[in-house]
Amino acid sequence: MSALRSFFGSILFAIFQAFVTVIFVFTALLFFWADPIKRYPYLLAWPHLNLWGARVFCGIRHRVIGKENIPNAATPHIVLSKHSSTWDVCSLPIVMPRPLCFVAKRELLWIPVFGWGFKLIKPITINRKAGREALQQMRLQGRQRLSEGFWIIIFPEGTRVLPNQKVPYKTGGAHLACDLNVPIIPVAHNAGYFWPRGFLGKRAGEITLSIGAPIDPAGRDAKTVTREVEAWIEAETARLVAGKN
Image 1 (cartoon, rainbow, N blue to C red):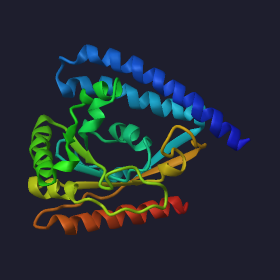
Image 2 (tube, rainbow, N blue to C red):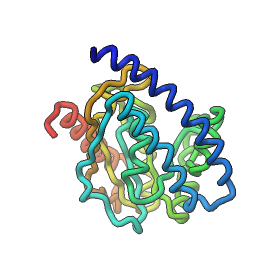
Image 3 (cartoon, rainbow, N blue to C red):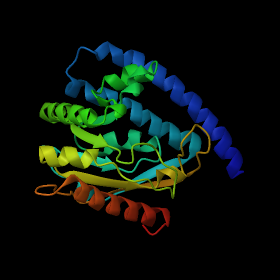
Image 4 (cartoon, rainbow, N blue to C red):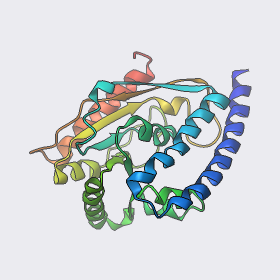
């Protein structure tokens, strides 16, 4: 029964998500002229609808621990998060107290419909093949987004990874934090087990998202900061996956 629910629930959710995305993007484009911060509350409707759909069709719920570690919204921060699911893309903009600006590969903007809507949240888009130039692009755009009132979110693994899979963390997020002297909020979760990559395989359960204490990069190099971030996220993710939360 659980396998059938997962199969049909995943298909129904995929249909729901496609419908919502198309309708939402075309209505959101009506606000292209508005100030990015002021139109952000409307843009949050998309992740809210996706999380609602996941709960209704797939039985996926969630909870947040470590809320006491979320700092004052007025202070700029960079969020470095585990990335094993589309779920984190939907949940983090809702959990964090400030509008989030995603750092992403520029190719995402080329996706029909989705890319048009994604552009409205003013992401920092980089050419991953550009090497050092990509880091400079992120630094310049990052400084501008922070000045505009956004917090920046980066997935240091660089791509979605399977549960129990480990890849070396990229240092770009830590470089940005060190260069701009902005604290890092580390985030871990076990969403990959309930909402895996692809449109099939979703299963009922409760995702736990854990927010760690801010990490101050002042006076430290990017590699050292990255190691600290990676150690906390991976250890916390393993704890959540083991069900010891």
